[in-house]
Length: 299
Image 1 (cartoon, rainbow, N blue to C red):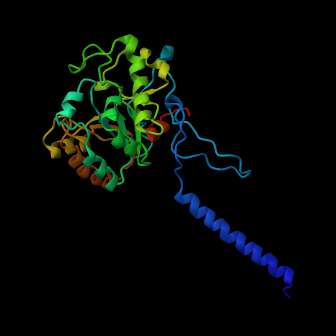
Image 2 (spheres, helix red, strand yellow):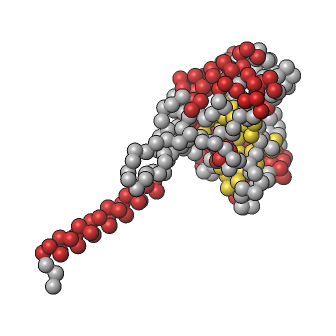
């Protein structure tokens, strides 16, 4: 016989079950929380730590970085271990040098909103290595990219001046200004409204030496290179670029491309060709932070 007390107990249990199911559903739909506003050199990773059974407060975790190299030099990451699964990171350099403001004012496009739209349409996680000068020129786009959970923004210097003496004809940054140039980029990101740029740095032109690694070591960044050159810079044949990418990709690869219409006009079409084919081959597209996390990184 079911007494009135029993009926109340059954009702409470049913309500608890329903609330539990609702909570689980909410958790799966909100797996990414807004990033906290912290120092760019101690940036938090997207999302928050899972709650413990005791319901302790949620705490942000740091993005994975590599340990410093010998003598404390800035560590350099090129690709993840080939045995860590069929993952690949597409990265895009948003280049603009400090002295190109006049060209932008005259109508040259250093942005590529069509590319960003294609990445969103295809749901491609990506890492954008942005110069501070680009963020100043296109603050609305920088903010939109930086606040989209699909993307992460990393540092490509403020000026896009070279950190070595001979780098594709780029002007050079004096050694005593290298660290300041990196930090100035993070300042530009914050002013543009980017909530939390990642502690990753790509040398302009990919050019660096021991002196440059030592100069930026105090910023706490991991330098990110690549193992697949797309060849999209100044290319006019999208199919040739796509084939170069597809032929070069291996598990754990980092592909370098560009987010600059004037200097890389084919990149949007390259992405629309490459992404479906990589997925057909079983690759999972990820951000650089995920690859670094598989490479013995620290958090």
